[in-house]
Every structure is written in C-alpha cells, then in structure tokens.
Length: 186
Image 1 (tube, helix red, strand yellow):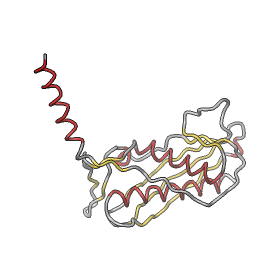
Image 2 (cartoon, one colour; image 1 turned 30 degrees about the vertical axis):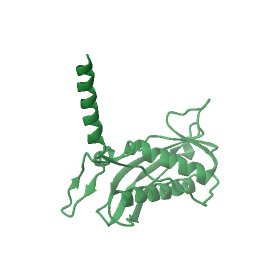
Image 3 (cartoon, one colour; image 1 turned 90 degrees about the vertical axis):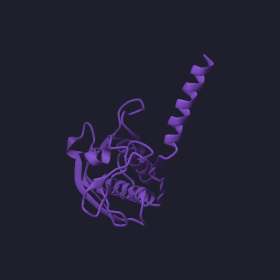
C-alpha cells in the first residue's frame, strides 16, 4: 500500500513539475477617466465571438512568414472569449456607471440593453501592431427602433516583444472598444 502511494505521489509530482514550465498571462486591468452617460442603466454583454485562432488558451503568435504559431507552454490565464467579455463589461461599467454583466444576466428582470461583439481580427506580429477589428451590436429589448450596430477597427502598437506586450495591447483595445460602444449608446 505504501509503495502504491509513493508511486502515485511521484507521478503527481512529475505532472506538477511539467506545469512549472507553463507561462500564463492575464489581460491586465486598466482604468479610465472617461465618463459617458448612456440611456440604459443595465447592460448585458454577450460572450465575445472570436476567430478560431484567437479562441484557444494557447497564445497565437504571428511569425514573419505569416503563419500563426502556438506553444502549450505559453497560455492565456483565462479562456480568451471569457476574458475579453469580462474586460469589456468591466470597462463599460467604469465608463458608463451602468450595471454591466456578462451573460447569463445574473440579476432579477432583464437588462435594458444587450451588447454583442463579433471579432474578425485579433492578431499582431511580435513587436508590431495589434489589429483588432469586427462589429458590435446593441439591442434594447422592446424598442427595436433603438437597435444599433457599427464596425470597429483599432491598431494598437505593442510596447515591446513577447506575450506581456500582447496582453497589454489586448487590454488597450478592449478599453477603446468599450468607449466606442458607450459613445454609440448615448
């Protein structure tokens, strides 16, 4: 019995030592002084729709040859669609002072507005410029004449090489998108 426990603990320790080489990167939390009043007091953010290459937990890095490469040792700290949705909701809350939450809506009743974001591009070459493009849609249930949508495109220079610079750029473009959506909801 003791031999079996020792064997199991060595397997567990070996598995843990492999995880020690894995780097995980969160999208940093940014603050803003921008304040924009919107009509809705409550807003639901749907899970951001990402291109296949950006959905993975593995960080996609664009090579000089145009190929996207990933490594099982370099990961986002959270699922990218969830992390971007949470960052967008956090930024919208800060900018608008509305109650903003990612789906499913956690409060009683229904939100006054619902935001959906569909991303076409979210990629950058090392030391280059992050391209973040797509469309956002805002629906106000019960008032279809108030529905809005717009395309967006941001180019955020990376402040260095590596995944920390890429994560910082993700945070910057998400904050810029939140500002753009808030301006569209005035």
